[in-house]
Image (tube, rainbow, N blue to C red; front, side, top):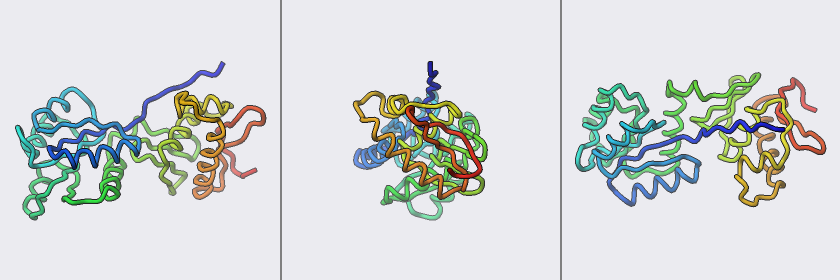
Length: 236
């Protein structure tokens, strides 16, 4: 019997922002990218959430009610919370940028900004985070990083979509074991009625991305069953 090694590697982000439109814009985009989102509309609520939860990154506005962003930042750094903090604010003065960075933020993004730029900043911070090592998966020359959602082989890496990442993560945790299409579909789509044909489509996507990284082949077809993850020096 196949044992499923299920593991929730979804990145958790806290947004501390009082502008509803900005929150909805960021939250919707990040959830579509596969991130789990909590929201605090004031600094007091933000501090409570940070006391009781662990986040992979915090998106923090400076001009928020109850407790302002800089004060919140000071407090969590005093507590020893080293979670990466990206300040998002309408303040553009150089003095404000310096104050935010000196207080303990890791990056600074001024409004208005594009979602693509925000996403790039988030991924950069997650790559730099010293907290990533515990969840990075290694196999042979391949490295799967859940924080930046990248697959790397030696010195090259490529970004994966949410579903590509989930398939690769599942295969890495069951490496060198044959996996059926049904097992992969159940893990990634959670029995939402998806045809197993979609597994073949995404496996093809993954193979093309791996081909761009290395001459080694990792995903092999097992006739009559499905697929297996096994590193080989030469492609079939």
